[in-house]
Length: 434
View 1: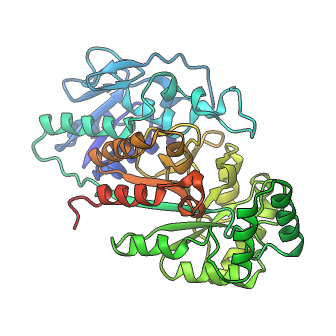
View 2: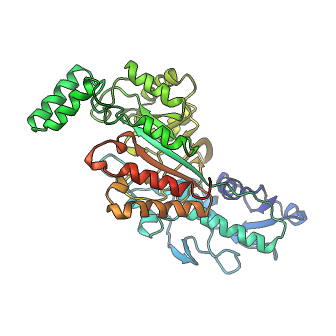
């Protein structure tokens, strides 16, 4: 067990040390603010304060983990061997940066609470982030720092007990629109056909009526293909279904539709199912509760997983609403404009509420790749970009999370070649595991 001495044991200190030591490195950690207990400890120990007590392993602390609330922090990102870091400390520290304060800054999403320019949907944009501005968005720096810390401990102590995580892969499939033509209702079907006619899109008209006459599978009905692709590799995907009332932002078919409900039930036989929270429910906990009850009534078990429509997060209210409704895990944390690690990590972590200064029970699992981000790349670079992210996650035994949609694998020209691309990516994910 690692014993950490610090002059003040704060919620921030225990939160980030447990994330790095316990959840990333699989190492037991305890804390003390009593010098005599620290001196008497005859196993692995570390002091985390302004000055060392003696000749023990010492990491000089930044003030961040001993503050409350938010403050205007001056951050200077610098190169550290093969990676980057910030909060540089003095020469007596075994690490030239306070990786614990830096990790807390990224994991708590501290910068998203500070004043920034939001995008058109009110989201925190990637280009406002410290990682983007300093070119480390494509690296899971928190995990990299943790592994460097482990090597330092092993150099000092021969009997370090730790258990690293196994690499894992969690493919996610968003379903904002289950079908392109089916089950839209008479009014929407008529207006859709009229729109196609005005555009002289006769191929679309033909496809629409072939689907409605059951002569062809709906283009967005790719669920059987998705399930089978993962079943052969013994991978369990996670689907997020939108069950919102029809609105300008949310345009799925009615949650009352019998075929739609049957689809969700059949998918739940082979995969995990979560709720894609509607745009309107992001700021309305009563509406969110209603949508939660809808999906629980279909899958016949408590809802455990959520993802927000438009990938929007209203900190801290979005997460507080999930906590109030006893949701266990959210998969919204990531960018839709850039590949990479929004929180600087590829390990699931708990949401820390900066207003209340507490670790909450809500787990956050960040994603790193979304199909729309790959779509904008040249075809020859698409797989290369995905593998580059995958390799970074594998190096630190992280959890690889990708976001695709059911319509990504449709016949749309826009998504041409994505079935083949995804199958190739799965081969790289499972390389050496067969």
